[in-house]
Amino acid sequence: MSVSSRGAASPARDDIPLERIDVSDPRLYQDDTWQPLFARLRREDPVHFCPESPYGPYWSITRYADIMDVELNHAVFSSAQDLGGIQIAELARPGEFASFIRMDPPEHSARRRTVAPIVGPGNLAKMEATIRQRTAAVLDGLPRGETFDWVERVSIELTTMMLATLFDFPWDDRRKLTYWSDVATANVKAPDAPIRSEDERYAEFGRMAACFAELWNQRVNAAPSFDLISMLAHGEETRHMTPQEFVGTLSLLIVGGNDTTRNTMTGGLLALHENPAEWRKLRDHPALVPSLVAETIRYQTPVIHMRRTAREDAVVGGKRIRKGDKVVMWYVSGNRDDSAIENADSFIVDRARPRQHLSYGAGVHRCVGDRLADLQLRILWEEILRRGLAIEVVGPPTRIYSNFLRGFRALPVRLGN
Ligand code: HEM
Image (cartoon, rainbow, N blue to C red):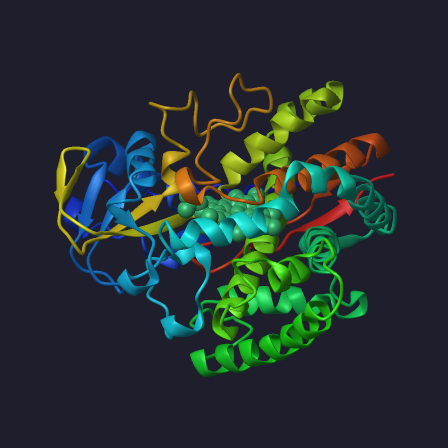
């Protein structure tokens, strides 16, 4: 059966007047039909103003080079929550969701420094054997000859295990972490959202906060250990965090460490399925795995956008942006920009410069967990190849309704013998 998930077949959308283009509609990402709209913006109006949207007026930055300019200019383009934060959608209760991704230097820098070592090279080297052993167990436990959901059995299982390891979270309760991650990122208007209102979301955060407060109390009174909660509880810069900031930081790590990597595990399989010649290349040359991982992260682009707010008037790509304007960097578009990446719409496992992409952002907020994500993905594909697993995608993916995270609800697969 031939299964394709591409949006390439959708209309070119050249008929829509430029000023009416609004790329914030989550359905574009759920249906995977965003590509032609962004291709047109990159071509005709790469720094584009949308005067009216469900999120108010906003600028779209769609080319690779312009996104870099905004990323690297954090003095002008702010991530601060009091100006609006990092998503095109405003938070319902901004005060209850403080974390360092929503701060500018200098507040941002000290907090980031406390968290960074846990996902730094030294600790990752110590974690590699555990990750490999858990990945192997998950793959060896997969059913043969019957259809199952790759998202549920592999992507969610592996990333949840990783989070439980990072937090030293009670093992049998680890699926709570997945649930909280889904709650944190859910669009309450999506038909299959796990929560239906902001009240439900914050009630669930209350339960998460209580659970983490208990772990914090245990760890703050014990000798420092190398898990994230202990590091936050003992860290010079973080031990006096407010409860809101503590919960905000944990949910940042839960979402950062979970959904993104999870969706890349699924996106990689789908991309290989849709590009069988690339899969053959990989099987013939397993040394290409690190390159496959980078290419998958680019091609999937798990974080669709990041938003900034202009602290002062500025010019980007020749357009004048005013103080207070909302500026959205569409990574999905920058990663498909042919003027920066050759054949950007193609999935190619042996690219010359596979790490040249925007999926991890850039500048002071560049993803702090990038090496951990790379490691988990590398091990997954090494273990799949080592076992010679013939994984067949047997139905179309179900994608999530979101303009922030590009992800999957389900992907039916079957293992050959
Ligand atoms: C493929 C997987 C991942 C992708 C695509 C991804 C993507 C991103 C992006 C786009 C940003 C914002 C960058 C910017 O604003 O310039 C970010 C920040 C962040 N990510 Fe990731 N991420 C991934 C995995 C992880 C993992 C595994 C963790 C942690 C365990 C993590 C933790 C964070 C944190 C804490 C930040 C905030 C950094 C800061 O504000 O200084 N991420 N990530």
